[in-house]
Image (cartoon, rainbow, N blue to C red; front, side, top):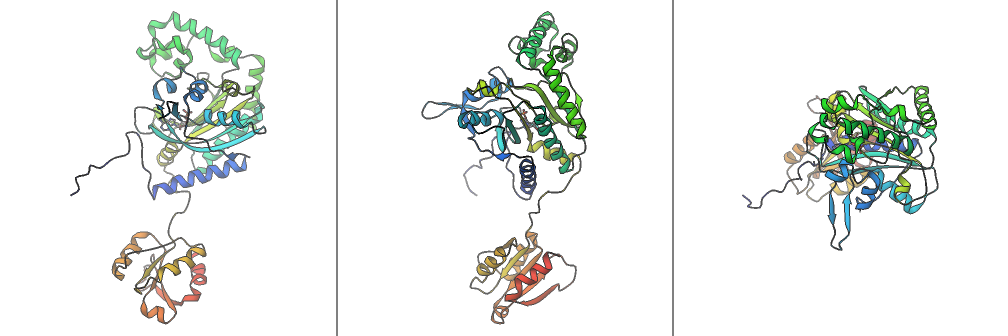
Length: 425
Ligand code: AMP
C-alpha cells in the first residue's frame, strides 16, 4: 500500500466526471445556443481581478465582499480576488475595451464564495450568464428575462416562478434607504441577532433576512414601491407589460433587492419550487445603470442575468427530468486481436467519418477487450483479428442486441458505409 496520503478536492467544491459531465455539456451548449439566438457573443475574462473591481462593483459592504470573497496577495504584492460573480468582471472588461454599444455578452464561469457548504450552496459554483450594456430601454429587460425563462422551459423545468421588482434609480433608492434606516433605527432592538447592527452599514440587507423578527419589522414601515419616481414606475410598467405580451408569467416581490449594491431599477429572480427553500434561487439578475461609472467608465446603462449550473441540475433532478441533454455515448468500440495495432488506422477512419469511437490498449486478450467494449456503452463493436484482416474484412457486433450471435462480416472498405446505415437509422 502506498504511504502517500490522498488529497481531496477542497471543502465545498466538486469534481464532475462523466457521465454526469454530459449533463453539464448539455446545459452549457443549450445556453450558448440561446445566447447566440438572442444576439450575445461569448466573453472571457480572468478568473481573478484587482480586488477593487469587486469592492467597487458589488459594494464593499455587501455580504459577498465582506465575508465570502477569496482575496489574496500575489508574489508581486498585488491585491486580487477570485471572481465571486460574473457581472463586475464583464463590466470591467467593457470599461477597458469600450466596445460598440449595445454590447451583448454571455459567459460560463466558476464563481468562488466562502460560504457554509450545503446542498445547493458551494464554495465554487458555476454560473451561466449574460450582460447587455448601452441602453436602459425596457425592451432589453424584457429580452434578458425572456431569454432566461425560455432557457429554463427548454430544459424541461416546469416548477419555476419569476419574481420581479424595481429598486428605482439612485435617487428613489436613496430616499427609500433613508426612510428604511430611520424605521430600522426605531425598531433596532426587535431585529434578529445577526442584523441588529448590520442595518447601520447596509439597511437593504435586512430585506433579505427571512427570520420572523426581521420580517416583522421590515414588513411594515416604508415600502420600496412607494418611493419610485414616475420614470422608474413607467420603466417597471413597460417591463412587466412586455413580459405579459410574451406570455412570461411574473409576480412582484417588493422586498426583492438582491445581494449586490450595483442594482438599479429592475431586479428579478427565478425560484425553483422543487428545491428546498434556502437554496431555491436558480437564477437572478437586474439592471445596473450606475455600475460602469463605479468602475471608472462613462455613464452607461446595463442589465444582466446569471443562473447557477449546480442548482439547475438539482432542480432538473427534483422535477424528475432525466434527459442528459446531449448524447455522449460511444458509437463504436474497436477490438483488435491482430497483434500489430490495426485499431489505430481503423479508428482514424471511423472518427474521421464522425463516429465516436474508442478501443482497448496494451494488446489485451479478446475476452478482456470485449469486457471493456461491453462496459463502454458503445452501440457496436468492430472486431478485427488475423483471419478477418487477411480476408480484408471486419466483424460488426451489435452490443445491444438480444440475439445470440448478433454479428456479421463486412468488407473493410464497406465498414463506414455499413455503420452509417446501421447507426443513423
Ligand atoms: P448571484 O450572483 O448571487 O445572483 O447568483 C446567481 C445564481 O448562482 C443564483 O441564482 C444561484 O443559482 C447560483 N448560486 C449563487 N451562489 C451559489 C453557491 N454558493 N452555490 C451554488 N450556486 C450558487
